[in-house]
Image (cartoon, rainbow, N blue to C red; front, side):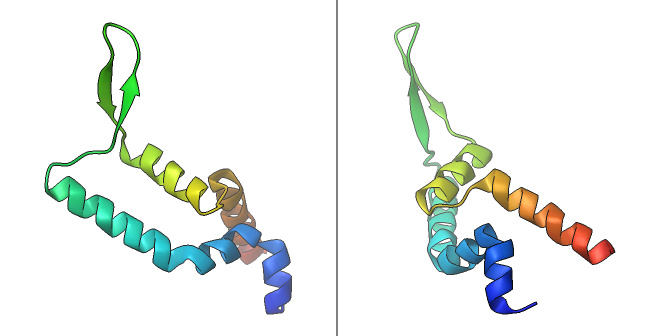
Length: 87
């Protein structure tokens, strides 16, 4: 399989390679904030409103969205890769 074939077969993984330095930097910054007790929150309406911490999975979804990664498609590609290895 050529590199061009891989790009067509696994476009989300190719995109992930392209943005890995950016996403690693964002991840490291979020970890630094967490170490200092600073959390990403979102505003929730009702009962006067309040801020609710955004958990790691939601934060990762936001990061993926910001760089054009479809996490569901990425997972589907991983399953496709594993299935290909088992053949």
